[in-house]
Length: 303
Image (cartoon, rainbow, N blue to C red; front, side):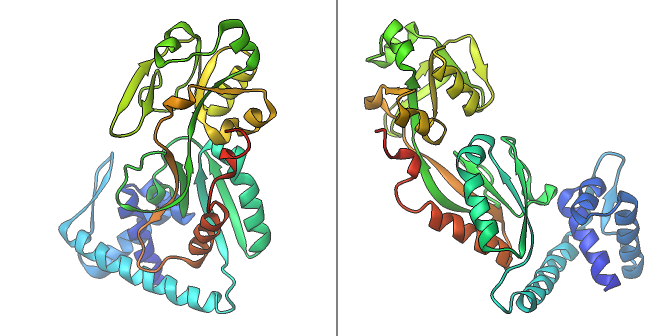
């Protein structure tokens, strides 16, 4: 077991490229992680990591050892899981990262349902629009919306999301509803700054798109605040349907430019590659896929 502890420390530090982050994943101090890795190197009689004041990198020997060590740890986890979950009941702490707006509007109720159905699983949920590093920060799974850029992760599509351009009836009565994309130049836009170019609203399909530059004095880093500002009559916003669906159904917001919709964006569950997927992760992803199957609730009742 001492050897396994040393190997686990080495893998965590090597994957995180940092003793600090690797130790955090393990729940130990940096000094303890350093001690375990040094003990492993002394026992093997070979240096596995190059250490500088700024970062940690693998030696050639360390790179080869890491590949085999990962397999060993995965096999050990699979062995323990087969015993722990022999009754079909997954256990343990499930660390989840989720985007703020989707978490508030859609994911929280699903998480509560999952927690009730699986009392042996503890949930540790972090709501952030930051693109977390699952491996370095110790997350088991993340829910992400939009284009995926990290090909080293396994991704499972959960649902589609439409972007809806909308404003309050009072605003549209005062300023008129835009009929064409060019009309947006004469309107006050409420801009969500989450995204690479927030002031560019893209309409149309992948084969034929049209980018429109919008202007407005209100800019927020999140869909909820944009929807609240639109509801209060400050202008037109463009937001994922799940953030505005309740207001659209109640008539507090009204969709405009529906003939110029963009292609769908997608909700995915992503998790690191593993030879044996932990049962708690598998159960959670399967649960979300089943819950969001079919036409999403946020598209119904207002279109």
